[in-house]
Structure formats: C-alpha cells, structure tokens
Image (cartoon, rainbow, N blue to C red; front, side):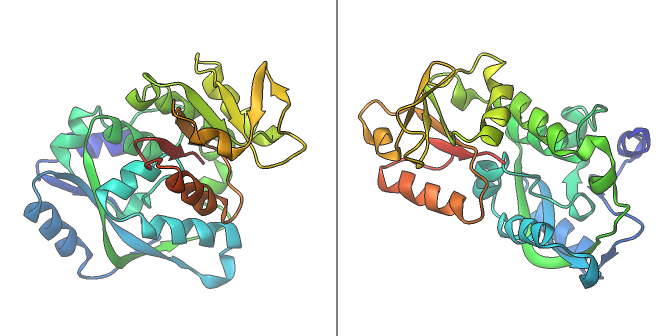
Length: 265
C-alpha cells in the first residue's frame, strides 16, 4: 500500500497505469488507454477487458466473474453495477493522477484497496469506463492475494459494500426494500441494518417465506413492489441467472436500474 501511494504521489505524468509483474499486457495497451483518456477529458479512469490464464487454474466462479466484469464497459453500467463486485482488474487500469490524488489515494484497512478506491471514486462522481478490448492477460494462481489475504475475504467485501451503500444518497430519501430473505442474504443485509437502514419489507419468491416477518418486517412477493408508493430496492440475490431475472421483473414494473434499484454482491 505504501509503495502504491509513494508511486502515485511522486509521479509527475498526468496518467498512471497499473501493472503486476506476473501478468502480461498487449503491446498496444498503454497507447490505447492514453488515447482514450486524452479524447475524453471528463473520464477519470479507463480500464481494459482481461483474459485469465493459465486455463488449468481457472474455476467456474472466477470465470463467471470475468464474464461479468468484461461486460461492464460504459460509465453508466459501471456505476449501476459497482456494488456487485469490483468492476476492474486492478492491473488493467489507467487513471488520471490528479483525480486519484484528490480522492486520497489508496487507503489502508481490512478491505481490498482497489475496490475501495473504485467505490470512493464512484461516490466522488468520477466517470470510469473500460475499453471493450482484451489488452491484459491476468494470471490466476493458488497463491494470489485474492485467495489468501483476509482483506479479500467475502466478509471484507461485504463490510466494504455496506459502508459505501450507507453513504449512497439514493438510499437516503426513500423507503428501502431488500430482495432476498434467505439466511445468507439476511446476514449481509444486517451490515446495512446495523447502520440504521431498516427495510419496510423483504421480497422473496419462496412461498414458505412469504407472509412471515423477519426482525418485525414482513416478507412479501415481488408483485407487492408494483404498488404506487415505490421504495428503493436492493437485490442481494446472487444465484446464477437470478440478477437478470430480478432486473427484468423490476423493469416490467417501471423500476429503473441505478435510479430505483441496485444489485448487491
């Protein structure tokens, strides 16, 4: 962390590119990102799509994460999906030095420092994008920090997301609903409830849960959300394909992603 900030604050060039020693980048990567940032002065960060290697190490969950990450390219999608997961491979980014310096650089704590920075930049209103080109080969290995460091544990990601959600202005002015009433989902939602964000309802499709009360709050079916006084919905469901189904259901009721609902990892 100290080395990242030392390099950031000692640098004099306007653009900073991240890279790790065991990854590989395409020869045109740096030029393409510099051209993109130069062409759009309102853009604060520009990443690239990535390819995982070596093939024999890649597990299905990580492969799905990269599929999702590579689909997050334009600023609107990145902003709307940033609470699902880190939308960038850290060694694929290039950013404006002054933008990251103004945000305070990298922070030290029991959390993934790159994801913390992306969330902080998003809440500062910084526009971030990704070139729709695979310009970095990202090495996967058993010893990578994302597998071994407690800062990259599921619990660390959940706490970090909850901390930034609690400061998101979209949650400050409307009643809140959590989609997902399962035990694991409730455990993650409790991190937000502990900060004073009590929902008015839990949404679930399981008929065995509908009609129950959790922490004094009713469990309701999705159709309940079609009523006139519309709350803000946080969907915590992470089952494969469920996000797409939930987003489609909400859209048919007139809910707008990023304005009326958000997906949370």
